[in-house]
Length: 317
Ligand SMILES: [Ca+2]
Image (tube, rainbow, N blue to C red; front, top):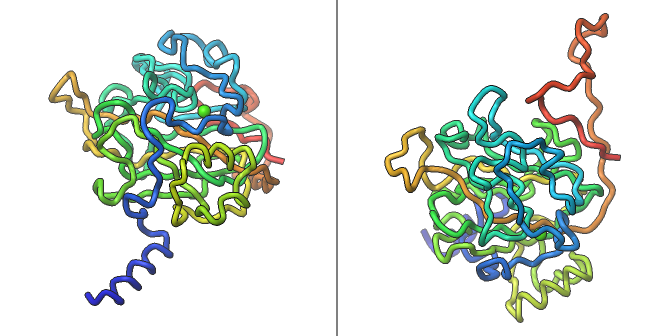
């Protein structure tokens, strides 16, 4: 292919959003807890420290961190009632590595882990992905986010994944903000090494940064980037504000399966941290629910919440 043809094919592919930008498009921020930008939407005051026991079999209300400012976290997979309790809600995990870990500011010590065999249903798929979703008190247009890998076992990194927004949190109501469809490391932006690395994904470049992000975020970014230029955005500037955001994982680098060949290295998924940043906006009202059946005399009281039922709608206004 001639260089000009290659360039136009590459531009077309990038514009279509069909492929993940090549490694290097996203900015490396360093490794360890100090690489985080901090003050993100899930914990604006950096009050959470990841301490505490998240392995006990207590209720969600008992285990939610007292300093948490979000409305709600939902996640998958969870262990259905009656099965082995690998993870019974977003704040609990048999190995003290619950879904909420990705908001606890300590990726060097605490990660979200799902073993494919032990509670992971054999691994994430397009039809049944893993996710952690967070509902915030206000709606935001996402301007940038960071992902931090776990400290070991790089093959548990997400391979195909997306960052999505919603104003209902319903299973069928999520919009891609950024999607990575990597088939190998060269197509993704998360690196095998170094571990515990924070990668920044942006909807701006250095020239447009100050008018895109909040003044507080501009200050943090300027300090952390230390003069490093951002040549291009990873995702489109957002016009829609969302109250819900989620990281959804469709595959990891280690293949799916229920076999554990090495008990010191079971196949699974791990993620160290997710930081979300945005400017406050007005959420579109969540779509009204259309009743699926004609209104008849109820045969059961649907107001009674059932254990294991889907999360209820958010409170978007
Ligand atoms: Ca944080």
